[in-house]
Length: 250
Image (cartoon, rainbow, N blue to C red; front, top):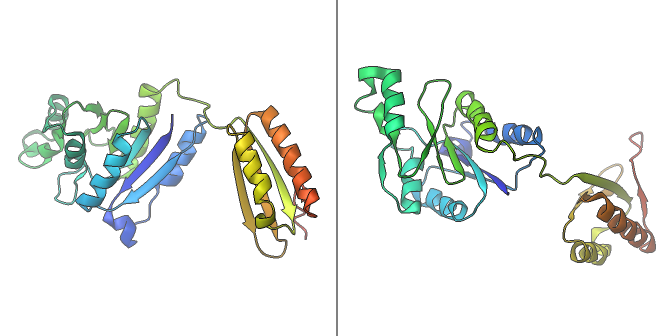
């Protein structure tokens, strides 16, 4: 299962606030042997939000969405999900009850608007103020406030995906190619991608005092061994050198 993050808010794009969700979600997933496949940061513009929700809602990806589920005019996530999914936006009985329990008469006329959810939604409990997030298919929509959304994210994984673990590549091998050029190793890299589609190849050039290419393969250990043996031979044939570790003193 691919895992994505949708992080919503004009304040992030303008620089008024710095996003904290991306790093947190990476860490949370890593504890379960999982990792993100994609991340999108989008503002509150309804057309932009609709574009990206239309993209993600057509997939089977597990998506964590942060922000835009409040009642103010710039919070458009609930409405946009309903529009893209072509379902009504209507009061969710459980959400209504939770908000009324939390705020009593002060729930009306405004706070109760946050109980209007796309039809077919399921509740995500909010441990801070009892105003729930909501799940629609494999998408999980939470407030932008970390103190609320982070424990909600843990609840989602623990309660809705308890068996989703250890889907990250199980092994990784890295070599450092000294004084090499990616352009002269492209054919070898393309050969590995073609012959070992199960593996993930990454090539990261580093420039500076000790210029090198950090080349990694992730996936099945036996396949990595075969593919990396081919890569090492290609590096040597091209007249370059490779090492398993860099000498940090140089």
